[in-house]
Image (cartoon, rainbow, N blue to C red; front, side):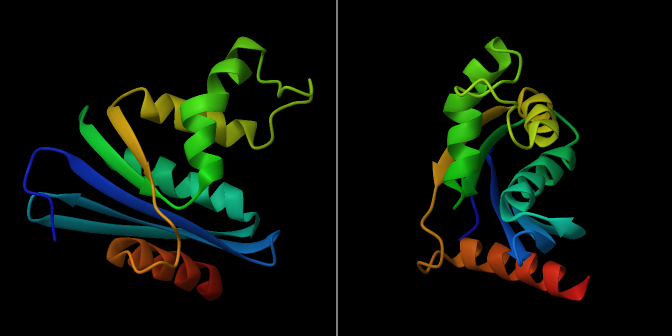
Length: 147
C-alpha cells in the first residue's frame, strides 16, 4: 500500500557477496502514487557500506527538503545515525575506543544528506515478510550479482 500523505517513505537495503566482496544496494522511494527504484553496486565493499550507500543515494535523489520516513533492516545504520554519530562528531570522528570511526567517509556523507531533511527512522526485521523490505533486498542482491 502506497502512502497517501506528504511523507516520503524510503525502504533501503544493502547486500554483499563475500563481505568484503562485490556489493549492491537498493532503495524504493514512495510518495503518494509515485514509486521510484534505485540500485547500484561496488566491486569491493562490505555489507555495512552498501546499507549506508542505499540511504545516501536515496536521499540524493530528492530535489527539495522533505519529511521522510526511512525503513532499514540495518541496526548499524539506524543506531549509527540516530545515536552514535553525535559523539563521533564531538570526538573528531573517533569511536569510544579512540580509534577512527569505520566508514567515516560514508557517515559524513550520510550526515550531510540527512541534515537536509526531517527524517524518522524505522527498523524493520529483515526477511520477515515486509513487502518493500523484500523488494529492496532483491534489488540489492541483483545489483551485487550483476557486477
